[in-house]
Length: 319
Image 1 (cartoon, rainbow, N blue to C red):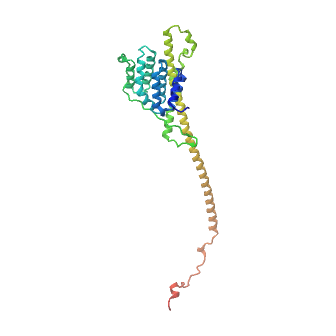
Image 2: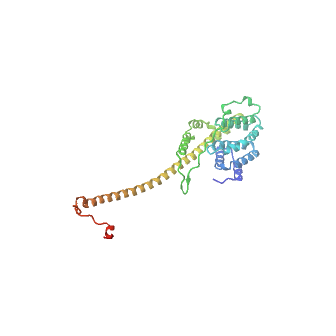
Image 3: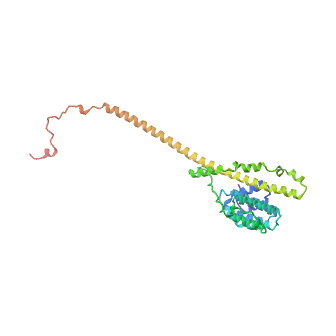
């Protein structure tokens, strides 16, 4: 993946379209370069201010995708977008209450509230910016007073060209496998929603049959909703692939490390077996040798009745 630069991001934002693939591709690129989150959001905000309304919507979808799918890596993008989003929603508010921009922005806010992307009070603040005359009718939610949801961090995979990484702890493996239990591919509710999406959102020819603005706007809303749903799910699937790769990397590291330890232990066992066999052979030979030696206790007492030998002092003493 290309390295990060402000110019590279500007170019990608210029080429951004409202297609699901375009939104997701740019989102994944930004998440990949999350260590440059501050610079990336500054460029995104600057380009947003210059963009036309339709491009602003696509850029909002990118921000939504980044915010939701970077949560497994950390809160870098949360912190940066947090400061610029009020001004972003002011842009949509200036378009009028019936604009497509406001309606799309409201759907994004609903998603953020439902999935606790931001603190509930902050989402309410953005709603007030978007529709300052309608805040009394805004649906309240228990999430408004909940603290911002903590982001779970998963350490990077231990895949190194020079060999396996450090042995993963039981806690790391448990956390990785536990996260995969809630994987996107197992989200039956979302998969059912996707399977039930109306066929006309995928049929370009259906546009020709539209006879009124009301019909067009109705279809546009369906398309916008589908883009949000699909882009979010695709991002979650991409995150799941990365998580599974990380889990596999950790398991491979564990297998590789224990395979090396197994080989060492097998060699040590062979050495011990050889020593045991040699020692056993020595013991057997020693027993045979002991049996061949005479029993000194059975020999006659050759010193019985004789006077003891003189000591050294006796030999040199004067008579």
